[in-house]
Length: 266
Image 1 (cartoon, helix red, strand yellow):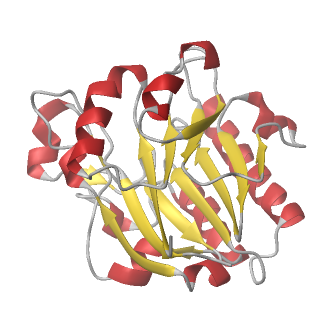
Image 2: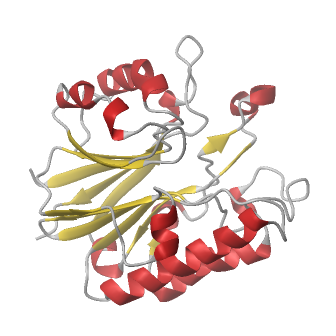
C-alpha cells in the first residue's frame, strides 16, 4: 500500500447513521484506510464494532453516553492509542483521541460548539482550544513530526468559509475570538490541507437540516484536516464527499465527510 486514504466525518450519531455508512462505503468501494468520526453519541457498549469489522476496520473510541464522542477506525495497525490526556479540560468531555501509526501521528477532535459570547460554554470553548494547543506544544514538534490533526473544529477560518458573511457575522463559529484560537494552530506550525490544494475554491462541510440548506449550498466549512509541514509533503489530494450529504431516502448527517489522500509516510 503506497497511499493512505483518510476521512474525517461528523456522523451526528453513529448508530443513526449505519444505513448511510453502509451505502457510502459501497459507493466508495470501501476504499478508506482510516475513518475518524465525531459525535458518536453513544457509550462504548453501544458502539457497532461488528459493523465496522465487516468492512475491515478496527475501531478505537473515546466515547460517552448521548453526547460527544470520537473514534478512529482503521485498517492500518495502530502502534499506540490514547484517550486520556494530562489536561483536566481535555479530559472533561470525550472530545479527542490520539493514535500513533507507522510514520505518522493522528489526532481526531470534536471541538466544543460553544455559545454566545460571555456564556459559560463560550469560555469553555476558549479554554479547550488553549488546552489543545498546550498539549500539542508539549508533545510534538511540527517541524519534525508527521502530524495530522483532523475533526470538527466548530469554527471557520474566515469569511470564505461561510455562505453569508454579513448574516453570520459575529455568530457561533465566526466570532473573532474563536477564529483567533484556530489561527493559533496555524501559527504553531500546521497547514490547512484544503487551502494547500484548493485555496481559491469555496467549499463547505456543514449545512443546517432546516430550510433545504444543502440544496442551496448555504453552509459553513468547520471540518478540517490540518497537517504539520512534514506530513503536508505527503498530501496528494483532498475532497469533501458531497454524495454522503445529498441523501433523501437515507437520513444524512448534517456534515459531509472530508477525505484526504496521502503518500505513505516512512
